[in-house]
Image 1: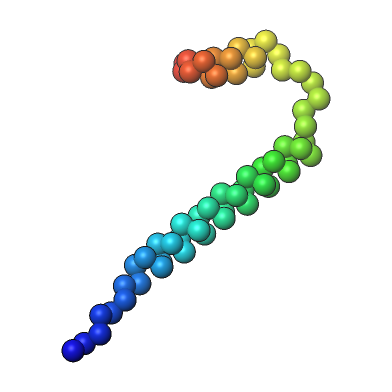
Image 2: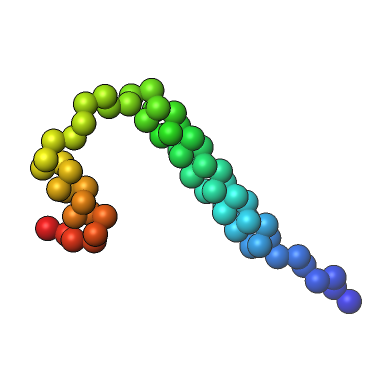
Amino acid sequence: MAENAKSMVLPVVLAAVFAGLGRVVFQRIMADRAARENRISAPPDASTRAKISDALRGIHS
């Protein structure tokens, strides 16, 4: 009798998932590093504070 062929779908999907997660983690590390290096020293103006507040409350214009 013929042996059962093992499917290559699962390993390929797992490799793609791990590669995607690794890419997300790498992008997050790079973004955090860039944000730390380019810290804004001036406080935001009133319109910027209002936009941030609206975004946090879930109000979309």
